[in-house]
Image (tube, rainbow over all chains, first blue to last red; front, side, top):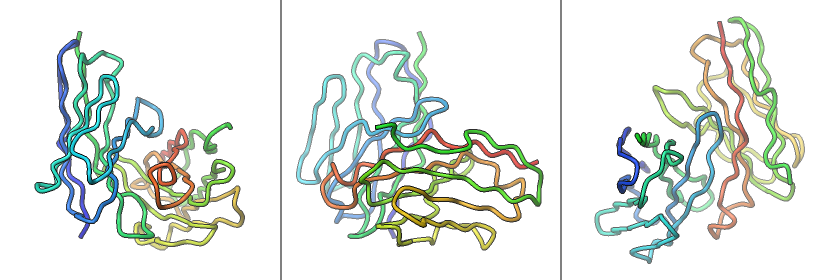
Length: 111
Length: 117
């Protein structure tokens, strides 16, 4: 079946890089997404990558996709305390179904 | 656009009471999703609608939960009777529909924090 797995917690120091990892199972996924949830709020789309791409960069964010290993990562350069949040990986499900979300990785940034 | 609107933002009720959560999706969106988030289970999809029709309700925990979408601008999630284990944050999200990332991007409401005593 379809499943998305993430590590639950990541702790980094301000200014360091953060790397959040995700594995997925559905090889037919067309797009893969990263969402961010700040405390007390709903999820917001951060970025997405098309499945035929290896990398996508957007300012401090770099998304890497290893389709062979079904591994997706989100790198945040120069991590700030404002980046503290829960980060969710998501994949497109089978046609006509909803996105499949992982359980989220809580990123804690200390100064 | 005001985004996805959910009400109430907080709900405290006693076990056995009926709880109704409400959602107004973004105008023009064709798909609506109800999620539940807890520390133990993370984010769970309960049900989603496309063009007001329920497409997949396999995530609905049990018969105590029901959801309706009588029109394109309103949906409810009802729990009757409520139990303490239903305590969670319930999110509503909407999107244009499946296809491109633009269409699939889900926009989340602020959530309803439910506490059942």
